[in-house]
Structures are given as C-alpha cells and as structure tokens.
Length: 146
Image (cartoon, rainbow, N blue to C red; front, side, top):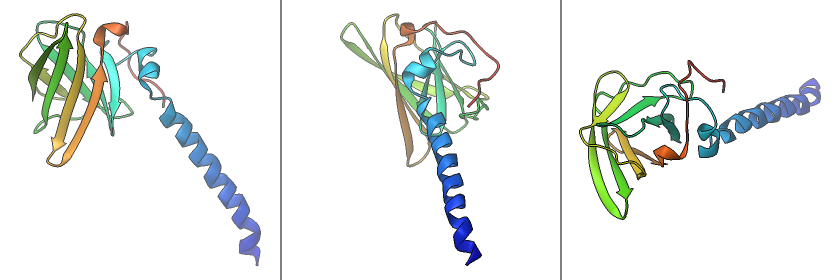
C-alpha cells in the first residue's frame, strides 16, 4: 500500500512540470518574438521544431534556421521557397541552402512585403511561417532563455 500514498504526490509533480513546460511553449507566439531580440536582427517565427529568422529586405532573401535553444540547424538538403505579396503582386522565390544554417534566395524582398516561408527539411516534412518583416524592429542577441 505505500505506493498508493506516494502516487498523488508523483502525479502532482508531473502535472506541475507539464504546466511549466506548457507556459514556455505558449511564450513563443509571433508577438513574443516581435518584442525580443533575435540572433541576427531579423524577424523570427516558429514552425514545428524550428525558429526561422527572415532578414530585413536587402539584395537577396536570407533565412537563418535554429532550434528552440538558438542552436544552428544545418540546412544542407533542405527545400524551401517564400511567397511574397507586395501591392497585390505575388512572387515565388526559391531558396537554396547556403552553408551552415542559412537559406538564400537570389531575388530582392520588397519593402512592405508580406511573406509565407515554406521549408521542407526532408521528404514528407513541411513547415510554414508568415512574416511581415518591417512590422518589427529587432536587435541581434547571443541567446535567450526558454
């Protein structure tokens, strides 16, 4: 019978642990990312197990991929594209792995664009995230707590 006396305490501990973990997961909303510094100063969105960081408009589209602890995820073998909408015009830009944890597209992301990024790390695995890169001002950081 002693096992029964300890069971409620064990269940309470497990429930408390799950509640803490759920709180951390809920912190990763778009608005949370928009108010926190990012690894490279871009806009970050969460998609499945990944953090996808779209850099501000420049001469090419650049996306950095990390996990939830900001550890770089190699993008070799990944397929990705971004669909942008600017002033009613849709554009599809193919992104290619560019070493380390980077995906790059050889086209310009227009200022004011809204974008949907689609990534496929391996066959049968697909994730997407929505961005509006100029809606936030972020600063690079070393890492953030989860």
